[in-house]
Length: 280
Image (cartoon, rainbow, N blue to C red; front, side, top):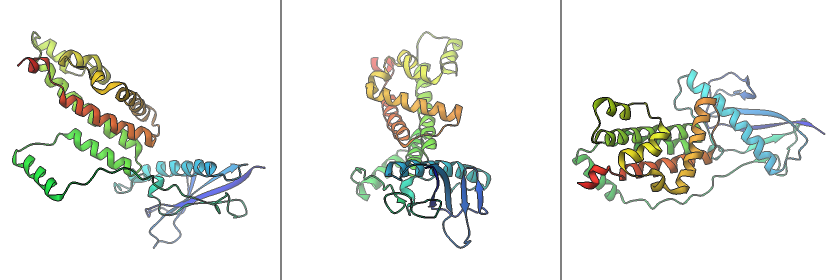
C-alpha cells in the first residue's frame, strides 16, 4: 500500500526565510533564535524503509535543498551560504509516516558518516615557512590555475560538486591556454596571420588538448596522462558540459575525478617543453 512519508533534516545554516513551501520542500523557521533551519520532503512510497531507500530519499531532499541554497545565495547575496553534503549535517535525517511514526528499520533515522580518507603527512611548520620564504624571496607569482584547483578542493569538501567541476575546468583552460600559446609563439616559419590563427580562439579546448598540443610542443598529453588519466578527462568533461549546457547536477565522483585530472594535466603541461627548447 502506498503511503506518504516525510524526511526532515536540520541544515548547518539559519536561512532568513519565512516558514513555508519552497519548490519541492518545506522550510521551517519557527524559532528565530535557532541556529539551524529545518527542511522537509514528502514522498509517496510502498517501501519498508530499508537503508537503501532511506539513502535515496535523503539524497533527494539534499539535492532539492541545494537548489534552494543556490537561489538563496544569489538572491540574498550570501556567499557564505554554500551547498551542503550529507557529511556536513550534524544530525540525522528523520523519517515519519502519515501517522507520525518512525519509518524505517533504524527508528526512522538515517545518517551517512564521512568516509575516512588517507591524509598526507603534515609538513613541519619550519618546512612550510622555508618554502613560502623562498618563493617570495625569488619574487615568484603563483599561477591562477593552482589557486583554482585549491578552490575546487574546498568546493568538494563542502559538497559543492558542480562548482568543483567548473573550478577544475577553469584551471585547465587557464593553464593549457597560456602554455599552449607560449609554445605556439615559438614555432618557426609562421607569419603573423598564421601565428594568430594558432594562438587565438580558433582552436577549441579539446583540440588544443589533443592534436593541437602535440603539434606545437612535439609532446602528447594523451601519452603523458595515460589511459586512466584520459578516462577521467572524459568523465569530467562530460560533467562540465552537462552543467554548463543543461544545468545538470554533479556527483562526488565526478568532482573527485575532475580534481584528479586537473592536477595530472597541469603537472603534465608544466613539465612538457617545446621542440625548440629540447634542441637548445
